[in-house]
Length: 122
Image 1 (cartoon, rainbow, N blue to C red):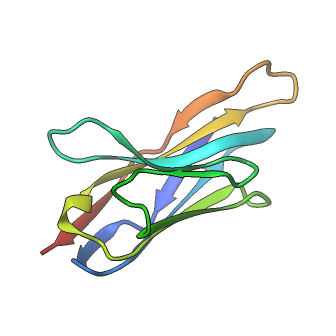
Image 2 (image 1 turned 90 degrees about the vertical axis):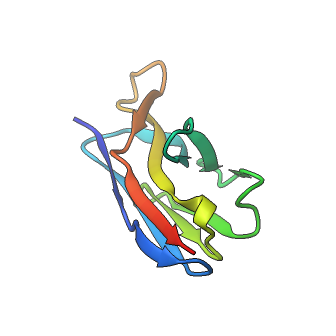
Image 3 (image 1 turned 60 degrees about the vertical axis):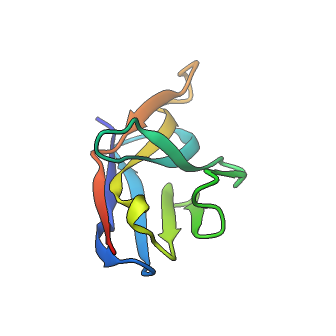
């Protein structure tokens, strides 16, 4: 069974940095778009950044210039480097991936990680 495993969350002071990583476990054929979403308490889940297999990226306006998403296709791993963190970045961060399990699958399947807490103190 495929799972997305996240790591790298934690507590940091405003202005600090954290790096999140995500990689799938289990047998897969290919991964299309991967990304990070976040959900603050009382809010809906929102997009942070995504990256395609061709390394095309999309960022939320709120994180542009501060966060960088990158991808290692050989390891099926994505990283989210978060700099100049603000208290409003506090949330649970979720990894997402569109995964094709076998070459015979006609479509990608949508997977979510379990979430990792990021807390930024003022």
